[in-house]
Length: 463
Image (cartoon, rainbow, N blue to C red; front, top):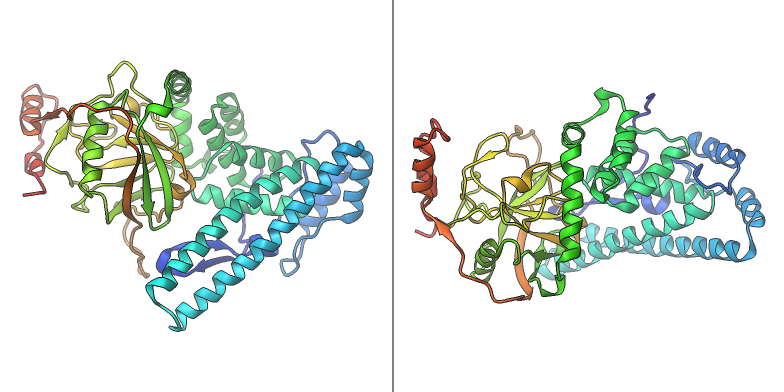
């Protein structure tokens, strides 16, 4: 596949870096240098596609992308009146949100300038910033949906430009969904061949269960352009497909109204988690006790790895943190869940790639950005994010295995608090094991050779 690599066709504003928000400035101005028309729509002729592609492909970076009004009117004139009316309404809505987003961005800039100029650095000012940041996040997601709706109906260069910008933004943040998949594939179909479009489409297809399309998309991507994340998906594709089907069956068989829920408040915003008290009662009981004790309050997201997961609950900060109590594994329960995007796993002590000490989960939890082949076969799935997964995707990346660059290192994002939203059914007491005895037993059986001083890490951190 001949691939054009994306260049900075939007101006990214790092707004108020103390809170690590990357705001897409040109999402408002539409200053993109590349976008496309929609060749998937049967209503539009190839001439329309070519006209728009020429317009956008040759765009001057200093000039915002604008719709070809003559082309838009021509397409509207060829539509049935009822459909044309819907298309006009979609365009009006898109433009209205664009204006609202511009005003919200201007207000964020005003707050930022006051902060950097030391006019107002009070806690109230920081909270105002967070609220404005969150409002912009809501508007960006709303505008993305509106752009996609408009792009389904009309050859709007402005909508195409915004979609191209946002798909790259979502790809960079591991934000994958059905709408990411649709936007990426529509842009590909129109002739755009940025590598990130294909990878975003394939990953999103794996998230939403369109595995036949995962294979087709990866088949047209040159092998050297695949990232480790994509190679992992390809290698475990059959396992991922079986796990997805099983997960859907378990979801359908579960009365979610009876499951406990908690709300995480973080430095990037809030998200809601549904806890699997039916399939992992011991782990859920243990987790809720820690929540009630305020254990996670102020805890860093100490590892946030691209294409993989976000981890918290490590009070030591070096990967060994625990509360001195270790849970019995529940991944072999009959109705145990699988590891999908948004799944929350009870992290265990690793002994090698994909291998863990049995019954060693304690306090650390990992939230998966993408489906993880086989993870549900070795680790207990505690729950899943049901609201606000975009917040998890926006967490600042922290990779302890990478050497720190010689630049200002921003602190990791933090769990401010966790609140129980719904208690769910009465739970049993957690089932704990003597991990030191478990390790010794496994060592004698030859399962854990050469573990050295690992037992030193299992003492209670409360002591």
